[in-house]
Amino acid sequence: MGGFTAEESVNISAPRIAESFLSLECTLESMIDLSGKGITSLVVGRVVSIAADENYARGLDEKYGPSGFMFSIHAPKNLTTGEGDTTAVASLNVLRRVD
Image (tube, rainbow, N blue to C red; front, side):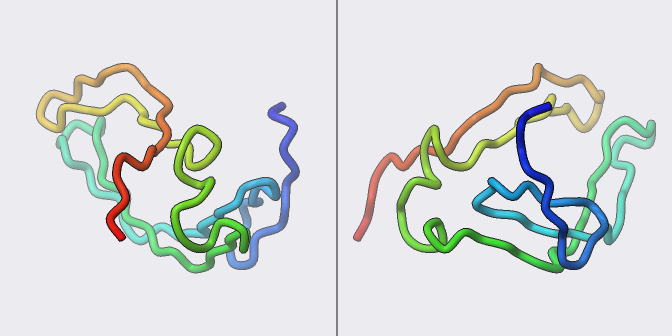
């Protein structure tokens, strides 16, 4: 649907996205219900393999900014009540360099 190319992963059964400059293959370590109501969980995974495009492997480059990392901020929850805000998409921008 998004026009991406599926690529076989090394250690897990889910495919990677070939166009992605960074892929983390993870396995599930544990899932802990934080609310006691089954609405908020802490998911802990273990990274078992990393695939990174060499062009994005070092320094402050194109991975920071609108064409780089995309973060899905999926309905942040109040851990006590389970109430959540709307979902958002964000990118990371460099505000200041310290050399």
